[in-house]
Image 1: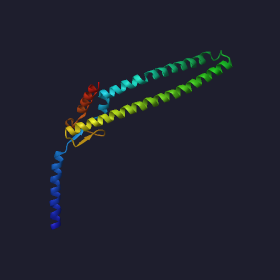
Image 2: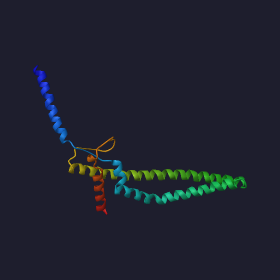
Image 3: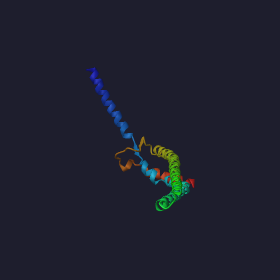
Amino acid sequence: MKKSAFVFLAVCLFGLVSQATASDFKVGVVDLNKVMEKSPQAEGISNALKKEFQARDQDLIAKAKQLKQLEDKLARDGAVMSAEEAKRLENDIRARRRKLTTTRAEFREDANLRRNEAVNRLLKKVGEVVTQIGEEAQVDVILTDGVAYFNKRVDLTEKVLQRLEEIHKASK
């Protein structure tokens, strides 16, 4: 009997403690996709990458056009060319196609590497801002991805975007 009374008292006490703790518990949510789309830093990353890789992209386009012209020439004039000329042109086309494929792969790899580096730097900065806002608002937990539903009153996304905008303006 004493044991069951003790268990009952412990359960009641635990219920009261957890209820008091739960009422003090604050949750916030940040839509990381929205932050990564709409922050000025993300726009800056996009513009910088376009600028950095624009010349190489134009070069690839020009080489692809040259290759297409040679392929068209072979298709159009191949029947009237000597066997040796046609063979030489086919070899040239094959070599250019191989080089273009390799160059495209290197371009994609370089662009992805740079994009990932820049995005990781931005994610680190966003993490710092989220931490600052969480501490200022005295939030216990901030959730990002994988949240099925959240009320707008716990959404900290706009605060994060505003802070990133302030940081961006201050860095100029």
